[in-house]
Length: 123
Image (cartoon, rainbow, N blue to C red):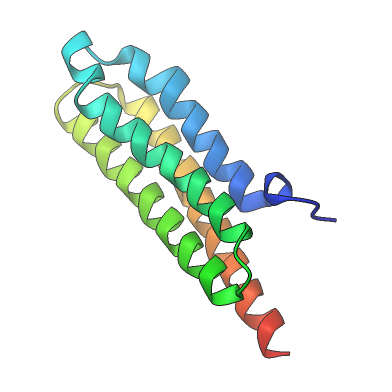
């Protein structure tokens, strides 16, 4: 049973992305890129969890779905930053592979939650 946004599987997946970026990706970046690319990547990852939380607190299901859509966009932004970091040879292949898997999982769960919100409202 969901008691709060922290119980949502989509929030947990977005949190895993945020922790991955903060603990495993950013520390591997060169010092000057930690404040450029690393900061952007971390902001996007933080935005994903924050949007799920904010949407959960909204009264109307469409508001909730809109914030989840924003979270989905933030996950794709994280993935794009990971691709850029790999293209610029700042992170190894295994990090982008893991990051892609994690963002894909988060997006899949966000899509499922948004579908659930729409279905439960239409019944």
